[in-house]
Length: 448
Length: 142
Image 1 (cartoon, rainbow over the protein chains, first blue to last red):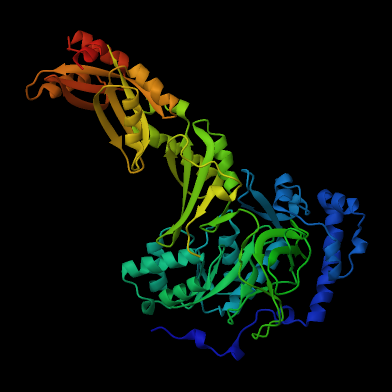
Image 2 (image 1 turned 90 degrees about the horizontal axis):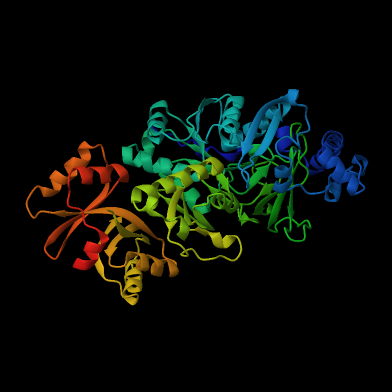
């Protein structure tokens, strides 16, 4: 029998670390200011990239005393991370690094993030705050269906569940039918996955004849891709749980940079560790609360790879006012889009330029391509169209078998660069429109 | 011993076939036989025609992905089992048939095929005294 756990009154809302999550605003600013000075001092002395930048701006760590001084600091971009591949921005000595994650990069070089033991501890703390805010406790059985591996989602969520003392089921992705069976048979109460995977799971369960009443599911931690309020309603209805946003990016930490609470209205930022700003992506000026712009984070406590004013390219706003859950931390609204051309497909960052680099290095094809992103049965699909060069089409290619081999060869190359599978479609010469600008290479048919 | 077949890469969408056929019409090329090996997204149109070299050049000029493929043409007796007897000789020689099609020309059954080993196929035809047709013969009949 399913119990309505989520009708628990708000007064019983659990908070993992009230000392930090409910700090007065003045105390928080004071703490952030102290930590900012410390982190600037740390990178100044450990990361030549930042020392050079600060020196060229005639800044020393002593110029950064309060959190408001942050606007004096330079920005860090994805390009900076790429230029310093793999360990150029690492501040801690290699002997202190205990884990290395990698996220997709735009030109084949992934972004490498090393974590010290302290970093992993802070990450676990932040995940624990998130899960507790969703209502997860020691009695829960929680399955993690983010991919385990280089991607931060799987291990990040996994450690968080263990930190609060719930039982973690490391389901990862794939084998959805087995997962559905375990959800019913083990009485799994919570799940962490992408929202599109949640819908796919719901569909699989429906096909298998597993009803939501046969499960004990009550909590979903959904993130790694943008989703809408309509998707939330649908997932909640079909799986019989409450779905909460979980935001993060590996450059800053991983999942749990911010998290929703039972109010489901904005995601609380772990701002004692990750200081948020919203800027105008053109003028780089800081925007007031409530206005939508590019989200920028400074890691206040990170040892492995601290970043100053990292431009996430995610567009959102900081919600004005305080949440009624009791937490005083600021909340960010839904991600409204991207300030660059990055696509998020099955939770993985995909840049059209990655596809471009593969197509340009394949002499069989003209330097033109089209990405068609769609969502079929709640799973994202990526179709890459390329143009066969007229002079390449010789008698060697006069069978579908030979053309199919060309497609498969390109698909394998794309998969190794993008980390996700793409279907390749070879088109006749001069059939793909010569596009103006980058976005013309992409057709996103997903209904968001 | 082989003849030239035009192979054309076409997308499997309405209008692509007629575009190629119209180009051949404008060049006054006489078709002898055509067939398509198609998939959901594209097809390979195979054409036996008079003046294949000129036809290929005309299509290339128009930007079409076209190639000349060396294929064999054998004349078949008009009796049941003739194709089986011919193909068996290639199989026994260890030759794979990549694709095959037949048509009638002036009452003569013609078997067109491509193999994965052109040299060995030549040898098999010579040793088996198989009645192959040259491009010249085909053009004369067309």
